[in-house]
Length: 224
Image (cartoon, rainbow, N blue to C red):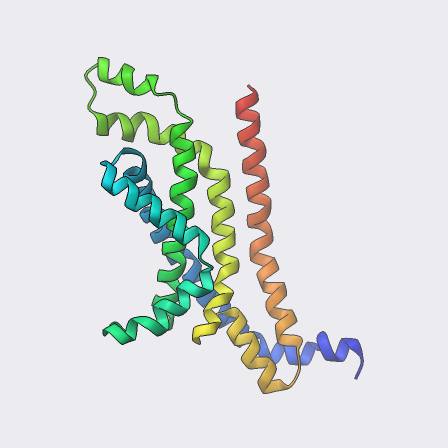
């Protein structure tokens, strides 16, 4: 067989396309769930890390350091295969979403911490002098400024989450890679894997360009 027939077989690709599209939908859904819950949890962890009482700050620091050091695949395997031993059974989708969310929360917390600490403490002092409560100052003055700073790196983290969805195939989650692997085995041809790679590229490349655009915009804002 020629290279084209082996890796770029149009007939095989068209037969596998429905499977690939179902996998793509699952991948997008998994990524969105992980990003939404991981970002929300990361904001909470960061606020505890920066403004919480000392014992809670230490717990938050430990959480951030450990989850940033442990590979995503290890977290996923522990959740899916270890939790049943303590009576907690989760589906492959929930396990994958939870694993990615708790890891993303650690990265989000660290990124947001850097953003918060870049805001001058004088703003808190000025707000306190005006009689504005701490939580109101944090919500209306500090967080909006910090979020503007952290949008580019956080967007990059979200792109990484979508790429990491491919790990869900390890726990039989029918994501894009799992569907492509099944189609390859069924049709005895690697074309579905090439098709999956093209679909990943089609929705991740615009996100990568978005990160670059946000970084340029952020640099321009600092230069003005």
